[in-house]
Length: 460
Image (cartoon, helix red, strand yellow):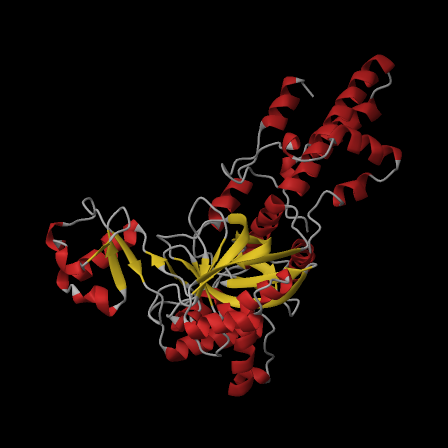
């Protein structure tokens, strides 16, 4: 249930040395073997402890790495204390992340393994892309029956089928509409082995974080959810839209320092040249209709009619474009700023319809938040800020642009977890829209050889 590989540890070699010790009589032979045994067991302990604490892989290179140097524990002293206190096993357990999300997922991995003992022998399910409505319905009914969402009596009841389908959708991060959409049918074709590896991958991801503050905001990009956490409990949840596959929202650990009510949008160069410029070349009034202004590099306003648009290109564009605050502003009514090298932030959006989609990868990289005013008011109240929720409403009503600094910057994390445990204590699997799971899974099962080489060189 730890999501680790037994092959990563020299258990066979330890067993081999133990049997040698039992079979020999000479002290002159036993003592070197005991030294080898102690080295192997110490190596296994250090490796397991670091894997539990910081993961099996280097998160940047996705290569197996013995990272004892990277954890804030004096491992030799830690092991010695565990031996003296006869607490070797509990000392290993304590090396793991202690936050609730990790513990819940680890617990559910044990449940998943117990309930799915056919992980490596199950018959895979496939539905043809050309399947008609009747075939799709029969396929889904059979799935829900086999996986115990329905029984043989309820499987033919349309209303019970729809309710079971909603539960399935909830457990796969989909909109709970009881409809047989393509994403629902796709999720039904995911094998148990894939789900097992998904849990393993996400336990690894959690170990890369290891510890979290008591209070923070976390965006799970795979779940399209923002959550406010206080003392390991979820107190606020928002749907979000994240970056597309070509504009992936990066993973970030930072702190929200301030908000901007009724913000101006300083349009990035890439969007100005690749998206806005072609539209302006067709119709220069596009700028005025959408509240865009044109500025020189020094910030001086320039009438759009004075610009020779036909002579401009993505390589030759010496202007800056800004969008004024207002109903059509792409940032909506508020944005939330936290330092990061990618210039990513949270913001409102006028495009509300995207929040009702199953898969919400539509932005250029920033995170669009549903009902962001509620998030702003939560942060102000938590911060005991002099700007009250009521005074924030006045800014919105009067369309006043204002920076609002927090007294204490609020921690925020943008993460990517394709499996987690929800508020119903159910394990949830999200579609790996960024294609990251397979990379990590392949890396995990690419076993290290350093232990084997060391053992072989000693002739054990």
